[in-house]
Image (cartoon, rainbow, N blue to C red; front, side, top):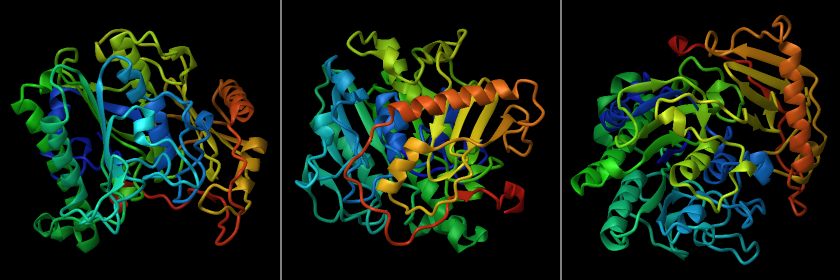
Amino acid sequence: MVADDMGYADLNCYGGLSNTPHLNQLAKEGIRLTNFYAAASNCSPSRAGLLTGKSPARLGMYSYRPQGHPMHLRTSEVTIAEALQEENYQTAHIGKWHLGCLPQDTAFHHPQPHDQGFSYSLGTENNAQPSHLNPVNFVRNGEQLDAQEGYSCNILANEALSWFEQQWNQEDPFFMYMAFHEPHAKIASPPELVEKYKSHGERDAEYLANIENLDLAVGKVVDYLRAQGLLDNTLLIFSSDNGSYRQASNGQLRAVKSYLYEGGIRVPGIIRWPELIQGGQEVHEAAGFVDVLPTLADLLNLKSLDTQNLDGTSILPLLKGENFERENPLYWFFYRTSPEIAMRIGDMMVMGKDKDTVARTHPFTMADMEYVKEVQLHEYELYQLTEDDAQYHNLAGRHPEAEVYQQKLNNKLRKIKEEAYYWEKLPEAEGNRKPKTEWVKYKRIEEN
C-alpha cells in the first residue's frame, strides 16, 4: 500500500495530528521503520524504483510523467508483479499508475499494467480528477469508466475487496499493489471528518481529515483480510511515494517533495507479517523502496530474477532480527532541484551540488536530458543523520572522511551518467521555465 505525497510525520504513529488507528495498529503489530526511503523525491520515478528494485536514474525515469509525455517504464524492466507471476501468484494493480499512458494511447504504445505483470488493474494514469471526490478518470483493465461515486481511497478499498471476492482463486498466492491517491492535491475529504479538525484552520482541517480517511480505507482492507483468515499469512507493507509538499507533514525533516533532503525522500515505513516479524519493533537502519523486490526474491527464492543487477538489498535479515549489512548504498538523483544527488552511507548522507541555475520547465525536456549527461558536482554537503536528521549542520568542511564520501558520490554520478537511458523524442523546453531551486526557506515543525 502506497500513499501519494504523504509526509514522514503525517501518521499518528509517526507524531502526526490525524487520527490513524488502523495504521497505528499495523505498526504496533509489525515493524515501524524510522529511516525508510522512497526511491525518488517525486511520483513516477519513485513508483518505478519500488516495482523494479532499481534506481530510477537507471530506468530513465528522471521525473514525474506528465500526460502525453513519452517517458515511461520500459517493457524490458522486470517488475515485482512479473517476477511473482512466474511463481503462479495472482496479481492486481489498484490505484495510481503514473508509469506510462493509461489507457493505451496509440501515439505512444506504452506498456500497460497487464504488460508488466498485473493480470487485473483498476486505476488512473496520474492523480484522481478533478479531486478525490467522484473521480472521472478511472480505467479498469484498459477500459475507461464513467465517473465513480465516492472518495478515491474508498473506491480503491471496495475494488480490493471485490477482487478478492470475484477474481482471486483462493488456491493461489496473491500480490496486490494498492497505490492510493491521497493526500496528493487536489484533496477532498468527508465533511464529518473535516469538522473534527476545524480548530486547525480550514485548509489544515481538510488535509488532516484526508489522512484519516485514507486510514479508514486501509482499515477496511485489513479488516477484510483478518475476517477471511488471510491477514497473518500476508506480508503487508505501507509507505508513501515521496515526502509531502507541506513542511508540517515532514516534521523536523528538512525540505519538502522534489528535494533530496530528508523531507523529500524519507517516508513512513510499516511492515507487518507475524509469521516472520516480531511485532512492536522500531527499526532504525536505513531501508527503502528499492529493497522490496530483492527482499521478496530472497524470501521466496526467486531464482529467475537477477538480483545482482538491482540497486536494492534484501532486508530479510533485518526483518528477522538478524545482522544486516547493506551491499549497495541507497542513492537518489534529481536534475531539477539542488543538491542534485544524495547517497546514504551508514548514518551519513553525502550530497552534491552542480550550482546549475539554468531555467527548467516542470516536465522533462530535451534540454534536461542533455543536462543529465553533463552534470558536474562543485559543492558538497555532509550530514550525520543520527545526530542531525534536520540537516542543520553541514560537516563537509570538517569531517575527517569528507573527501572519501565525496569521492564515492562522484563515482556514483559518473556511473549514473554512463548508464543513463537516453530519451530521443522529448519535448523542447518551452513555456514557463523556472530557475533551479535550492531549499532556503526552512522552519522547524514547531514554528508552523
